[in-house]
Image 1 (cartoon, rainbow, N blue to C red):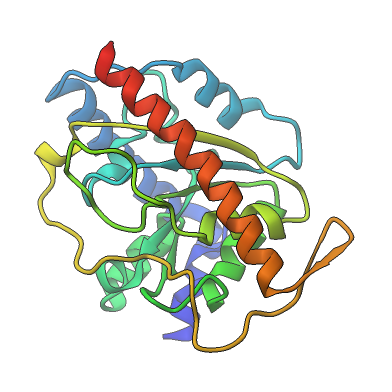
Image 2 (cartoon, rainbow, N blue to C red):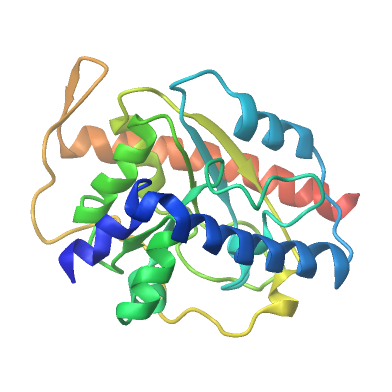
Length: 247
């Protein structure tokens, strides 16, 4: 299907008109669900809005969150004051290939929605992770769900998969990383994701040696670094989850 229709995700595809229409429709849906049909409380929203609208030129934004339903994205961005109808400001997001890219129509739609297909179990160096990395290198905003699967349990944040950490390390410019935690979206979910993982931390082949900030990192060094970064993000997410429960 032509690298999963990567061409449909390009900004200049049909002058960007199909992409704008998708974000107008999906953004309106998200706002209706989040603000009209439900009551939504957001803490520290100004920080997210500021980083989306006016972070320094060329600096990428990487947001990470827990994953409670297949509707987390776009509902995460439907709260009052967020520019969810603006396709230019919208996030890129890693999406499960077996859910969002099952046929031609779905692939085209989700590509227009700035979604990047990720194959379950294919490892952190699979083809489309390079596409996500390029988004960050271009200074764009990327969102990931590093727990790797939908979880509706009121439980501590799971050990994070290493795909997000690998993007941080491999990027030409270190992104601004903004963890976030949400709850309640599972009540409006229409289906649950199948399988356990969006990424796997292992692969059948040896990992490539990568260069990061002038240092060559072999597989052992990468594993140590990815694990450390993931643990730091997980700790912050768990602190946010605990704070939300107590407020």
